[in-house]
Amino acid sequence: MKILLKNKNFIVMNLSAFINNYMMISVFYAVPIYLTMVTGETGMWKVFVPAIAIAIMVMKLAVRWTQRGFNKQILMGSFLISALSLILYFEKSSYLFLLFGTTLFMCGYLVISTIVATNVNNIAKDSYRGTANGIFNSFQYIGSFAGAAVTGALWGVSESWTWFVTMGIGIAGFLIIALNQSPQEVLHEEKNVQ
Image 1: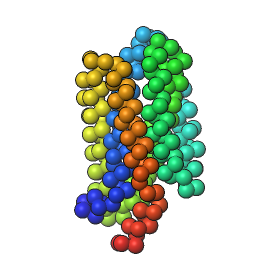
Image 2: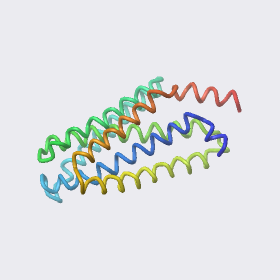
Image 3: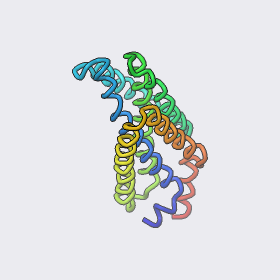
C-alpha cells in the first residue's frame, strides 16, 4: 500500500473514481424523480436506453483516442461534459432536456469509469494489482455513499443547490486531472523506480 499511495497518479485516479461515482449517484437519485413526472415510471427507458446506447459508442471512440496518447485530454473533457450536462436538468419538465442531459452525463460517466480503471491497472505491478483494485473499488463505493448522503440531504433544502454542488464536484474532477501530469509520464517514472 505504501508504494501505491506514494504514486501521485494512483491517488488522482482514485479521487477521479470517487468523484465519478458521487456524480453518478446524484444523477440517479434525481433524474428518476423528474422522469416520473415527464414519462411516467414505465417510460423511463425512453431516456435511459438511448443514453446508455450512445454512451457505449462514445466510450469505444474515447478508448481509441486514449490509446493514441490523449488520456489526459479525454478524462478532462469527460469530467467537463459530465459537470456541464447537469445544467440541462434545470429544465426538469422537458423530455428533450432530460434526454440530452442524461445522454451527455452517461457519456462522461462511462468514459471516466473505463479509462480510470484501466489506468489503475496499468500503474500497478502484477504483485500489487489486487491491492490497487481493492483501494480503487473502495474509493468508488465511498463516492457512491457520499453522493447519496449529500444529495439526499441537499435535495430536501434546494434542488438547485444540489445540482450546483454536484457540478462543482465535477469541475473539481476536471481540475484534478488538469493539474496532474499525464498517466504515461507517471507510469514511466514508476517503472524506473521499481
